Structures are given as structure tokens and as C-alpha cells.
Amino acid sequence: MSRIIAIDGPAAAGKGTLARRLAAELGFDYLDTGLIYRAVGMKLTRAGLDPNDPAQAEAAARALNPTELQAVDLRGDDAAQAASKVAVIPGVRSALLDFQRAFAGQPPGGKGAVLDGRDIGTVVCPGAGAKLFVTASVEKRAERRLKELQSRGVGAIHSAVLADMRERDERDSTRSAAPLKAATDAFVLDTSDLDADQAFAAALDYVKSKL
Ligand code: C5P
Image (cartoon, rainbow, N blue to C red):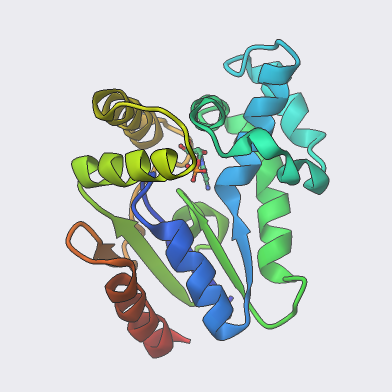
């Protein structure tokens, strides 16, 4: 598992940007595992089904096809909320485990894999060669998410984004199945006062020391 980089952390801490840059720098493949949960959540929502329903959610997860990860409506906050609802269901998590481990074990490009999510270092790839836990204060993360939404022309207000983020943090950290937490052997990177280049430099130094 040494050619695997596991990146975990809460929403909008900067892990996606970091994961993509590390993958590009090292020539590794990249899997955004949040997209998988979003795809399952939106599949149910679009069909008028309840993402909190364990049997329906597990069936949707088992039937997930990789092409569904390309759906255009997976980036929004509706998808994020639906994702964090299906993500508390143990049957959904175990259905998605094989998909993630297959990618980590045999990345399409063959050189190595970067996976980001909430439980990569703790559950999906506990033997990963490098583990990063990327975090930032909830206020900073809400600010970043607000800017990102505004840059996409989506109207949003800071207090609503902050409340949404707190709600999702709470659900992700307190669930009993694979809660969001740093692996004991993870390098914790707090990006509250770092820009993207500084965060990338710190992460790359750490990863190079491990792989
Ligand atoms: O990372 P992203 O914000 O796209 O993830 C959406 C939701 O999917 C998270 O809030 C979390 O509930 C869930 N998730 C998870 N485990 C992962 C990735 C995402 O539970 N490995």
C-alpha cells in the first residue's frame, strides 16, 4: 500500500485541491471519494426517494456505476447534504468500500493513487504509505465555500453556508460508522492560515519523506 496517499478532512479544508496537485506532481491517479457518496445521495433524491432510508440507500450504492460520477449536479450543497445522510448508513459504506479499494489497489494509470475523503486513512486504506489529515477552522472553511459558490455564480449567504457546514461536520464526526477523524499516524495539516501554494509545499515535503 506504499504508493497510496490517503487524504482526509472536513469539507472545504482544501483537501481536493491538494489531492489533485499531489496526483499531478507524482503522476498518480486521483479518486474523490466524496463524489461516490454524492452520486448515491443524488440518485435517491432524483428518484424522489429518501436518502435516510437504509434499504433504498444500500441498494442504490450497490447498483452504482462509475459513469454516474460524471453527473453535473454532484457539486452543489443539495448533493453534499444527501451524501452525508447516506454516508451514516453502514450498508452504504460497505457497498462502496470495494469500489474504493479496487481503485487504490489497481489505479488506472498504474503508478500510484491519491484518494481523498473522510475515512481513507482509517478504514479504506489503513496501510497507505502517506496519510494527511487536512483541516481548517469552520469559519475559514465557510468563507472559502462562499467564495467558491460566488465564483460559480451561485447566490449564498455566509451564515447559511456556515450553518450548513456545522451541520455536516457534526453528522460526519459523530456517526458510528467510520466517523471523520485523523488516523493516529496521519500528518495533520491545518490550512487556516496557509494559501494553496503553502499547503501544497508542506504536503509535498511530508509525502516525499514517506514514499
Ligand atoms: O468530500 P465531499 O464534501 O464531497 O463529501 C460529501 C459527503 O460524503 C461528506 O460530508 C461525508 O458525509 C461523505 N463522505 C464520507 N466518506 C468519504 C467521503 C465522503 O462519508 N470517504
